[in-house]
Length: 233
Length: 233
Image 1: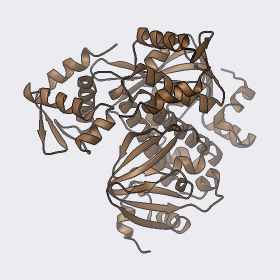
Image 2 (image 1 turned 90 degrees about the vertical axis):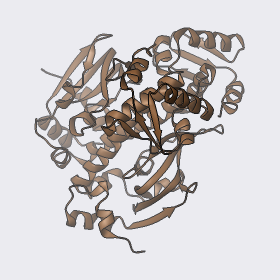
Image 3 (image 1 turned 120 degrees about the vertical axis):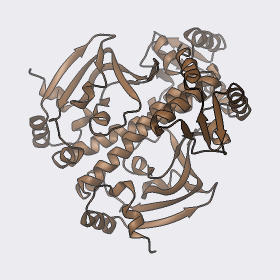
């Protein structure tokens, strides 16, 4: 299968990496691009052991499947989300993650079977290894934030923390959710109806203003800060 | 300052790494060992840019500090917990993490100022880089689990998910909490009193049995599975 080299070059795995290092990586780890429709399974645990993947466009939902039937969204991966690396090399088998498309295009890089992490690291340029580190550490930062958002019983506080953090991260008063309301309710671990009620209340009080389906404008920052500051147990 | 080379060699950073690779790393990144009492600050955000640290013994609490006054525990780091790596090289400045001792000994490895991630990776053996990857990916797995535990309003379900996952991970019916009840209530984002009430209820119903201050024996696994299976929104 052919792929667009410029598109591959533009993904974060190759940030600051020379052409020859990129070509060497692509020779060792042949690349395939696949498009997934909304709801398609992008990767299951079993497949994780053969490929590293990077999201080129769109988003996917990250789900944790429990041994006892649970299936809960634990995150959303957008452009440059890196996956497969964890399960491929390190045996953390007690929890199970699967990825479902929300409409996305993904680049897969195959890894020869039997290759150890030390083999992989020894044959990959430090620039690419550094970019993988960056992706993993970004993941950890987002996990901390996520734990912080949902570490309260109050729907109001969850939504407020989420909006305040996203405002800082996106550096604007206009927060792009990157997900629809149902996904946001999953992400914040609240019922869809409770989230709608809370958004409705904040809109009525002129604290926020929805813009389209996936953006929220912050009108009254101080009101959000007040909610946040009175939220600690 | 002197340190015990065997103790350093036994930490996960040097798993499967040859003596000469270890010596080379210690020459480039001089090591200091420090002991912290309960409540001591192990590292603040400012210090993160000079050292990588590894927990040798005991535990520390990982706190996320919000811009608006919040200070919430987002995790616990025990033996082999690696820290400092994230903040040193990658600029994810919008959230702030600090570490407080619960009684621990920590090894610090200094990193020359101005060293880039690519410099660090180029001069560090693939075995050590692989161990850092392993630490980061373990972190992400634990974060997923943590998000899963607390992604419900019910104290009963939070405690149940935590016990079931720890049982799988520890591979025994006897769960070592690794923290006291107050810390567990922080970790599960519930009030201390609500947690005590729930533990009391489960003890009365012969589902669990506390053993000392930081262990819980599971007596009725099926009862926990039933709670878990009826918990999905």
